[in-house]
Picture 1 (cartoon, helix red, strand yellow):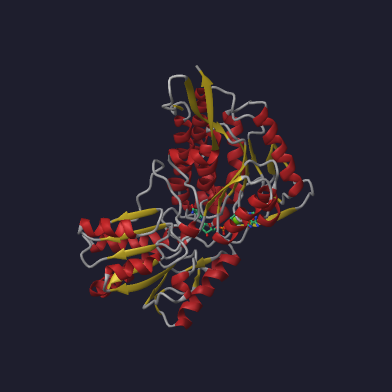
Picture 2 (picture 1 turned 120 degrees about the horizontal axis):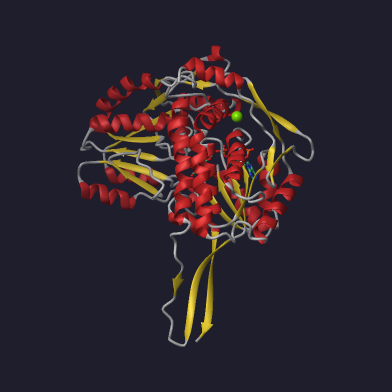
Length: 494
Ligand code: NAP
Ligand code: MG
C-alpha cells in the first residue's frame, strides 16, 4: 500500500477505547477516560476507559461465571480448536486494520506491524488452537491394585498484564495457551498501547469465544493492574513487563490469595563476537539489526555487544556504515525500518541514558539525539557507544531504546563472566566457528535463550523466558501450558 493510502487510513481511524467486559464494549464505571496520543505524529487516537478496581470486579465476576458454567472449558477440545483457528483467521482478515492500530498506538513501522506483529500473533493463537485436541494426559506407573491418572485442568480465571512494546504479540502469548487450556481471561494492556488488545477481544467473540471468557480492561498499572494482582478471585496472573513491577506482582500475589504468578521481565542481553566468528558481515548485520529493531524496545535486544579486541576496528567500521539504514522514518511508509519511541516518558528516559553514557566517558560514534521533530512525533537516532566499561549505567541497566553499548574483550572466559554479571538473564549470543568453544560458552551463559552464530531466530515452538531477574516460567511452546493449568492426580482403587 502507498504511504498516502496508509495516511488516509490513519486519518479515518476511529479507534474504540472502551473496555470489553462480558461480551460488551463499556465505559469505565467511574466514567473516567484518558487520551491516547500517537507517537507517530502526536495526534489523539482515542479516549481510553480508565478502568479501576470496580471494573476489575465486574470483569473478574464475568470471567468466573463463564468458567464455572463451563461454557468454554466444557466444550470438546476439538470445538475450542475450531474457534481459536477461526479467531486467527479473523486476525489475518483484519491484518491491515490491526497493523495500523499497532503502528499508530506505539509507533512501530507498518511493515513490521503487518509482517511481524499480526503475523506472529495470529500464528500463536492458531498454534495453541491446533494443540488443543492433540495433548494427552498421563497414567502413572503405579502398582496393579490402583489406577492413577495425571490430568491437566484449567487453572480458572487468568489475569494477563502486558507491556506496550509488542502489544498484540504479548497478548497472544498469554491468551493463546490460557484460552486453549479452557481458562477465562481478563487482559490488561499497557496504558500506552491498549487499542489492538481491545480489537482482539471483539474478533475473538466474533469467532465464537463465548462472552465473558475473554475480557479486556484498559487502564493504569497502579489502578487496574494492581487491582487484578490483588484480586482474591483471580487464580493466576501472567505478567510481562519490567523487573521492578514484576517484583510487585509477586508480592501482591503473596499478599492476596497466592495466585499463581508468572513473570516475563526485562533484559540486558550480551552478544559476544569472537575473532574467529564464521562471517563478520553477518555478525555485524545481526548485531545492528537486532538492537535497532522495534526502536530498541525489545526485552531480548542485544544491548551489550562484546567484540574481541583484534576485530573491534573492522567490526565498528562495518557497523557505522550500516547504521544510517536504520535512521527513523515515517512509520506509515512501508520502506521505514525504525519508527517512533512510544511516548514522552520513554523518550526522556532514553535521551537521559545517552547523556549518562557521554558523561561517563563512553565514545559516542553514532546518533545520540532526537530526530524528525517536525513530524510532531517522537524519534531517536540509532545510537552507538564504543569504549563502554562494564561499570557504566549504560552497560548495566535496561535502556529500552535504540542504544548499543560496545565493550571489547581479549579473553572469552572473562567476557562470559562479564556477560553474566547482571541481574538479568533473558538472552545471549556467541559467535565463533569453533563449535566446542560455542557449546562451552552457551553452557556457561546464564540466560533463557542462547544464540550461536545468529541472533534473530524465533519460533512459536520454542520456550521463551528468563533466568534470574528476567523472570520465571516460559511463554510459547507447549511449556506455556504449565502456567495456565493445574495438575490433578486421581487415584482409583482397582
Ligand atoms: P511495566 O512498566 O512494568 O508495565 C508492564 C505492565 O504492567 C503494563 O500493563 C503496566 O500498566 C502494568 N503495571 C504497571 N505498574 C503496575 C502495578 N503496580 N501493578 C500491576 N500492573 C502494573 O513495563 P513496560 O514499560 O510496559 O514494558 C517494558 C518492559 O517489559 C521492559 O522491561 C521489557 O524488557 C519487558 N518485556 C519483557 C518481555 C519478556 O518476554 N521477558 C517481553 C516484552 C517486554 P501501565 O502501562 O498502564 O503502567
Ligand atoms: Mg499509545
